[in-house]
Length: 283
Image (cartoon, rainbow, N blue to C red; front, side, top):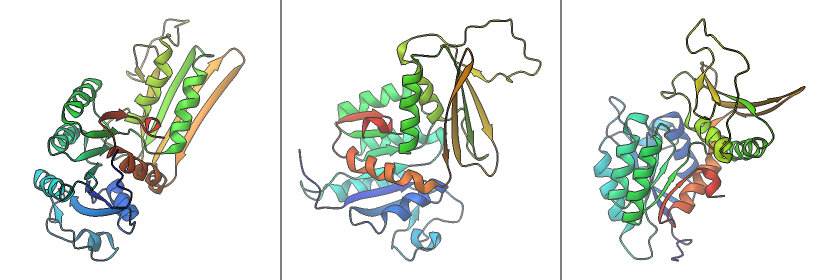
């Protein structure tokens, strides 16, 4: 395997002016492991402005662009200057409506996507996995970059062996476009890996307000989504049994908590040949 450790990894950030994109740029721009080579954002009136000046971290000589493919083309050429150059990486925190096309396009250009945007369907992930394998490009689809969340998910998967009743609640800021969150769906998937059913009904339930019992998965798990200003990202899994409940909760207080996971994904994705789903696959 090629050792790229002595050369900085070229990085493009999509959604550069968003909450997560801003944090990613701040985390990598001074780090000698990385070379920020592109900032993509479609915010009105921002085309051509210097991303560093817009974020208040000083001029970086990286103009903001809305040209996604053009930026990927430059990234691909930058990374292919020599056999010893690391592959380029694009970190995507944009919108569920565009993330599938963004990921396919990045793979086509040979740029390794690290996808933090949630909203990809299981079928889309399968299609991207097949495309990545054919192209021999590493892809990391990460619903949540927090190590603490990975630990919660692993604990929930273990607990599912002992409990037959469980419900999940995820809480996010009110500008999050998708519900439930990709993180919460991933948690449910891990709980369901045993193949058992949950929450066998003991009475005939009736909702006087549609949706008040949350979203129902085939396994019987229910997911509740809350959107409020003041929240960042929070998740709770409650298991119930006779005489007890077991509660797992993770709270993200600041988005800087995600940056160690983002950097880990960038460092690992350039060595992958295909797609991985979930930060736990890279730890």
